Image (cartoon, rainbow, N blue to C red; front, side, top):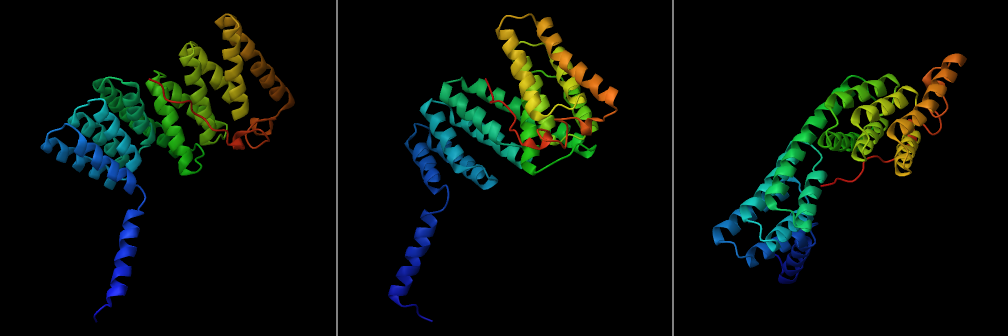
Length: 294
């Protein structure tokens, strides 16, 4: 059947309008313009555009690809190195790992003028830590740690990866997870505990005392809010010039008193104020995780 000219024109307009309105199309156009205007040889341009298309097809947001490509070219980064950044992001995405930290690491590095080789090395290391973290978190969930929504696992994986990058031993993280599981804690509260250890370590508290304090707090049934308060009080004490031993003892005393009161009253941790299942306990949904740092 022959389609009237007016109808055909309308169809073409609708199709063109839909294509132009596709999410990310503006970013895709920006990628093409950035590459075409660059001083790269033609073959390098074609290779980089092919890598960008591969990243889009893998599910990487076009806006992120546009940032990596345009910033990289503006900084004079070789096309092969930019393609390597895209390859790493695609590999992380294909492994079903959180890709956001990797994208942020690349984009922030380019924005700050970090040497490309250093960005590439740091990004590959982060990808490895994310894979290790995913294994740790998955193992804890299989062993009984309460898992919530998929977003909670992704957040926990990112937090554990950050801890590993900051040289918190895998054994410390796993032990914290085992203690959290025994207290019937959620994955989000485990994440808060690991984040607290990492933040304390980043601020000068040796890993072993930091881990001992946090694990004792978990044993005592601390809620997410109480773990945040513990972290805040420790850092505040150190900023005030108190010695490390004094600060640690000040933090341990309430835990010992809390445990004594629980034991003397014959209460288990499920019944303790602020413990799991009680107001202010593990269901508070307090977001965890500090920003990534160079």
